[in-house]
Amino acid sequence: MAISAETYLRLPPQKKALIWGVIGVLIAVAYWAAAARPGMDRIAKIEDDYSKQDAILREKQAVAANLPIVKEAVKQLDIHLGKALEKLPGSEEIPALLKSVSDLGVEAGLEAVLFKPGSAKPVGPKFFYAEVPFTMEYSGQYHELGSFFDKIASLSRIVAIDNYFIDTNTYTIAGDPQLKMKIEARTFRFLPPEERPKEQVAEDPKAAKGKGKGKTAPAKAGKK
Image (cartoon, rainbow, N blue to C red; front, side, top):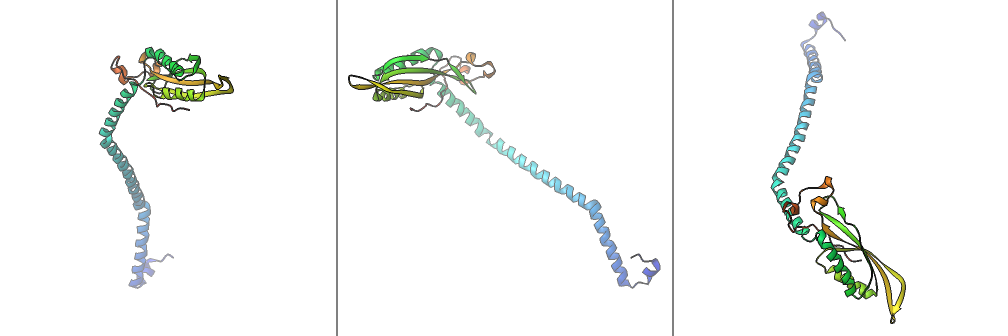
């Protein structure tokens, strides 16, 4: 309720002090709403931005601190890659390798029916090597097939048996059951830069050494 100046002057000192106290509170609230609160909000935002930037800085500092470790790890990977590449034959070695695989079947006691090599297929993403699939057909007995697979596993080159099929309609020779077997396998060879897809050609340990012996090898597949 509004009061006149004359009424105010007649008020006792205690009520005058109360009125001024209320006015002071209202002024403080108005100041907070108009100036202090927005300022506090800006301070809170600045503190939040600082926390985010500090987290980013700490993350980058951690990366920088680990950079020598990462470089050493990359160096070791290059060394391992060079060693792995040595396990892959070049294109000129593939015919002899495939013949040795075929001969192993005969050594195991199997009778060779068919040996059909396929075309090399570059393997990404680096295209350092290519798969060379081939199909074999033999006739023989179970234990001879097992012996054949053992011989393949002992090869210094990588030969993976992907699948094999056994014809259950057996026949016998001198009383021994004979099986017809079809085996799908693959080996791998080093792929020089000139044979890789053009968009994927990149420097690699073997290419950097010219005609060195380094070659890449995938993991050796287990027997089925």
